[in-house]
Amino acid sequence: MGRKPFPKGETSQLHTVLLGWYAQHQRDLPWRKTRDPYAILVAEVMLQQTQVERVVPKYQEFLERFPSFEALAEAPRAEVIRRWAPLGYNLRAVRLHEAARQVAAQFGGRLPSGLEDLRRLKGLGPYTAAAVACFAFGQDVAVVDTNVRRVLSRILAGVAPLPEREVQAKAEAMLPKGRASAWNQALMDLGATVCLARWPRCPVCPVRQLCKAAPLLSKGEGRVAEVRSEYLTKREPPFKGSSRYYRGRVVEALRRLADGEAMTLKALGAAIKPEACEGEFPWLLSLVRKLEADGLVKLTGDAGLDASRLRVSLPWEALAHRVR
Image (cartoon, rainbow, N blue to C red):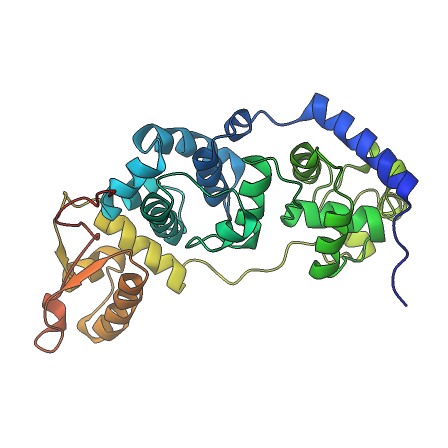
């Protein structure tokens, strides 16, 4: 048996209440003050897996150096990777750089507005494409991130999270025509400031009277743990010592080099793992080759002769890419 649809009258009431709340309590974020597709794409890529407060200063700095798709496309990749610090997840910088070059080469430096065209750009997944279509081009598209998924699940189903596909379908069905941008961002802000994962602030929530989870959460004095919700923070594997940890250390070590400078694999090993010995060169070489495949580093030398003498650098190009 399928779930009962949310009543139309309550959907309309939800729109009125939440949009009214958003008009008064929306977060003051720089990317909400522009409709420039490039600036919005930069923000959306930076916001992937990174907290808003860390993104704000880097976003403004990045746009000052690379103010357009053309400026970003013409820059050497190494500089883009350097300018990305300290956001982490450096592969995002590579993907954004590739997308900029694709837009410059195929679309004359103007981002296409069609959702399907956006999805065909390198590095743009369904979520990012939807966010740009909605926030830059004003399209009535559902933008479902972690906060939106949590808020809609609680409102519509209680404390048991809805399947991702079901949340997406309901998010699309509930869009207020012509106000999708404000609606999506209202849901995001509610999830980020009120409908929190571990400690939801139900007493101050503007939609608590329409939320199926609110009565259950209230019984636990706001503690999601009391009602065994799936929204509890999952236990993550240790970051230090992981492959991602050392990937980040490699890129950070190379960022400190002068333009076009390289370091030997041996020196790199000593920089990122001082206790490393020659027996770990195969591990380090494998790590570096994966980074090279991702476009984050450049490896030179003949591995068949002496792996320790291989040289590693950021991917500086002989000449900056030119938009034609």
